[in-house]
Image 1 (cartoon, rainbow over the protein chains, first blue to last red):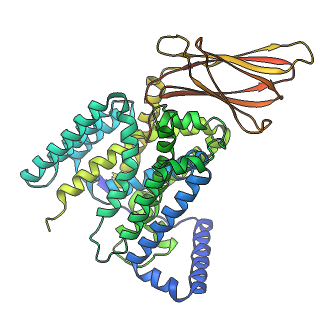
Image 2 (image 1 turned 45 degrees about the vertical axis):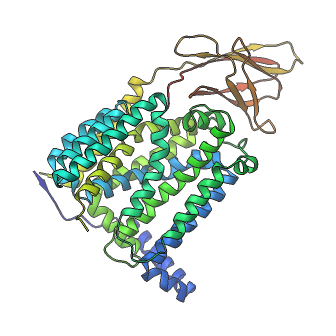
Image 3 (image 1 turned 180 degrees about the vertical axis):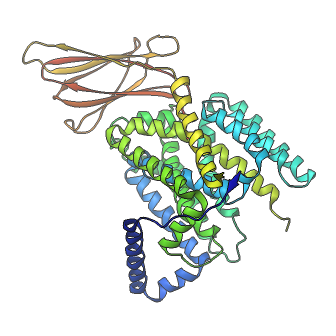
Length: 338
Length: 133
């Protein structure tokens, strides 16, 4: 039987640290004055500005030190972004309270996690589409789309994992786009930047300016070419590595900063204290502790062996792309008709 | 009674454990062996080796091998010849990382190169597609 309880207060040291962080941020915003005030209250503008900044810095990082960004990104942001996945796709949607979904989605995800083939994730997506609380017509359309996409991936054979991995980065962008109704046009700016940056990285120009020799031990060109380009050592393979580096960075920023901002009922910025309280409400103290421990453990592992830690993280995270797919299918099917 | 959030944490933890367990049981071992042989005093150290496919054990031509060390001015790169062999010569002593790329598979290994020594590295690389996400 499930029940909710009242969480005990945070340890004094943690509360004090959060209070200091809030005071520092408040002082910083006061220093910035009127422009900051507008960003604090106007979510559309704030989200557009943050995502535009993320796109720009991700592009600069990709051009200057792509192999470092690819190696360190998952170590620093990987676990927090998995936690955000679970929080926004499972907990806050209420899907975790629907027991049939635990079987329909849970079993395929466990199978995938244990090394099952990609098709298992699509089987799970078909199963959740069948169980969705939507009209039969909507569910039939969803089934046709999912099965068509699944057959497409089957047809890709050994390239399926690679294509899924690349597509999954851009999937988060689509999720962000569709998360809530937009009233203004500010969100078009980061979208245009994103498309322009991707086009630049796929062009011959990017490969000419990028230094792919500077890399951490064990996670250099061979590692990333094998993982992100199917071992293609031509310029196409290098471009795929660069695009993934950029898209992965944007993907993490969306999960860790933009979706949380978009998901809140309040349009204004919230304090760190409120953020921590919301995390505790959604994940529980045990869940939050597990998340922090996993994050710290991964960083510790990376300090010992960065290549092994990268490999280990991607094995542990294998389930989450399909979790996003299943949850997004449910969200799309169950959203009210306009 | 179990808190809902605790139940979710346990479920996610089970997923992560399943992933890790799957990695341990399904990923074939790719032994990369390293042997060291002393050379006559004064001779330059070198790293030689081979790249074989884990699937059939056959030597692989045109596999890319990259050697990294802080003691070098940038990484060195070469390709295996028709017999799957590679060589890096005139190397200063230091801690090295060698990576081999074969198809969609890669392997890496760290080792030490001492003065007047010959390090022989044999990569066995699985060309199975790797997990990307």
